[in-house]
Image 1 (cartoon, rainbow, N blue to C red):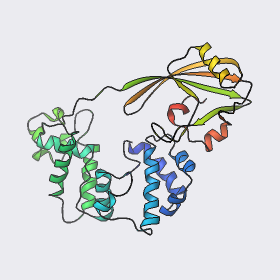
Image 2: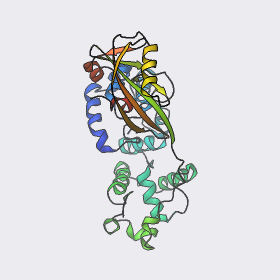
Image 3: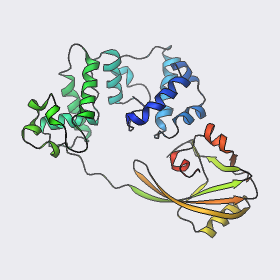
Length: 306
């Protein structure tokens, strides 16, 4: 459920299997070095989820003696577990009468009720969760939770026409009865993403690339990156900066432009590939095998690798 936050199931499947192999129980996850944890998470994004997952594991191991919480309220005390995740775990794993209200469930209920309010408003989400909890069945609560998830994923679709002819809830659906299924759900107007220009340096020396670790707070906190600067530098400016870093630039071999989109920010990236004559002490110089196995490199930087 933590991996599925903000990420499609098709993407998550392979990560999930690798995680189970590396960390077969909560004790193994609690004891894992953070670098290994983040490396296994590499490419999945939203890295705070991985850190919170380990914090939760350590809470279970060291504060609860290995006993996993089985009620909605207790689950909410775990780092990284919000109302949806707590509801999913409580109902699916422990048969608690608690809904898991995600985008699929919100879309189904917005269409059933022809809800004119935006479903991404926190107050609306809470009201829907309370209403759904009131009608949870006495048995098979986990199956009920998953059936709503599946209905939203396969029938009451988010993109394109919903498959109303296949839907068991169509006789109860106000939007379907009005022929207006595509008019729902309503959402608040999204703010445009802030665009930032970034200049990235792929400094190469004797077969190694320069990397450095990001700070412990903010975007991509604690992960590794290629050296970079805010703004868009011209070629000579990039060479001059590499020289000031002590990398003794010899030649600029090529440049690339890429765009990487985060939730609220878009990076417009210019990368310069520079052969260097010295391994500046400002950076860690890593071989290709180390970048592959050791250093967790976010997709925003990894996409510049050959």
